Structures are given as structure tokens and as C-alpha cells.
Length: 158
Image 1: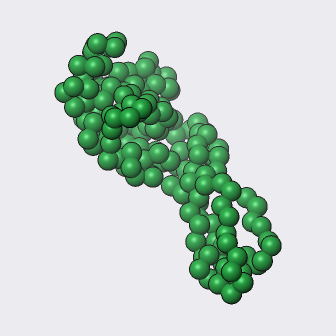
Image 2: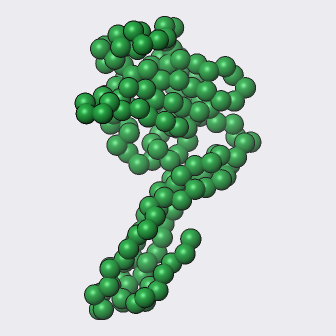
């Protein structure tokens, strides 16, 4: 996924509040060999992007002043009761460094499982995401889990 960011020069509570009033969200990009960089992103575009599962679990392309760089979403701070994103942290991605990420699990095939169809069993999903350590190029958007072969009383271990 791709998003557009703009550099910001002022930092601090007051500057961040003024930025939020104008419809922008203060963010920071850190990691790699470069120094941390203060950026701002359009709040509405960011709000809608955060609703997409892939925005949380894949390498993103950040367009900053015409240059594109790969980043990961690391932290989002949201207001307790308003629909307002307070701050976002992004981490720069190096193609040769392995990443720790949580990748969502997509379950399928439960409607074809004999235990669920005929015996009235229920599939209980204990986890919904899995910790993965891999290179950025190998990072999956999600992991598919096939439940069609499950029998009554059986379990699937990952």
C-alpha cells in the first residue's frame, strides 16, 4: 500500500495540536541508518487506511517529497473516545534486515469440514495472528489456514 506524507518542522504538544486542527496527523519515521524524521499525514486518508488489514501487516510505500521509501506501521495512538488519530510511528525497512511482525490468520474451509457440517461442531479460533520473523520481501500479507480436514475433537497446531 502507498501513502503520501509531508515533512514537518515543528514539534511538541502545541505544534501537534495545531496540526490536528488543520486535519493532519503528526507522525515519526525512525530506524535504519538515518535520523528520526518528523512527518505529517492527512488524517482522513490515514483513518481509512487503518481500516484495511494489510496496512497493519505489510511493508508500506511512503511518498515523502517525491521520494518513495519502504516503511512499517509500528504504533498508532488513538483518542479514547473521539474518532481522532493522535500520533503514528513508522519504521524504515532495510531489505537485508529481518523483521518481527504479527501476520493475521485467514481461516477458510470450515463450511466444508465434516465435523462442522454433519456433527454440529464449532471451530474455536484461539489465535488470530502469528508472530513472523522474515525478510521484508518475504513478508506475507496474511496466512491462510485450511479447516476443511478437521474431525470432531481434533485440533490444528501452528
